Amino acid sequence: MKSLYQRWLIMLTGVFIMLGLSSCSHINLEKTPTNDQKLLLEDYFNGKTRAHGVLLDRGGAPQRYFVADILGTWNAQTQTLVLDESFVFSDGERSKRVWTIKKVDSNQYTGGAADVVGEAQGKINGNVFNWTYTLQVSYKGRTINVDLDDWMFLSSNNVLLNRAIMTKFGFKVGELVLSFEKL
Image (cartoon, rainbow, N blue to C red):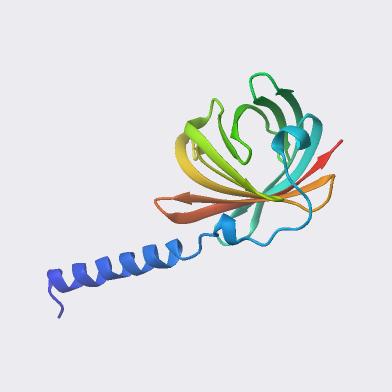
């Protein structure tokens, strides 16, 4: 029979292996292949945009579908983009989020919204944008914080593809897949 110490050591080793495997899956923005498109958030999201998406559980099974209408307003003087997002989910739920995004330099952005904890950080490489932030979400009657690693890929002048991995304590808990269309 294994001692309590041996069982604890085996469990701790398993946790470190899982953490090591999850940290190996991060994409490097600078090494990401790009196309000939140049993504500028202030250009793409200025005006009306519509998003169609699906929320997947950690195993990849669809949980909810949604449509979001987005009105973006760019202020060149303050280098600020405001995104007013209105969501309608397949189960009838409606929600809103208003992002305020600040352009820091030619390829870097920061931002926030009422349900974002702290400051979101984003960086562009060509047609690829990586946006990371912590979001407060409702889960089983309470609010929890999940980390999002959001990747956007401009595939043409009108279509922006988006994949966001949601994690809690470093473990994947869900994923968002959506496409934006500039209207």
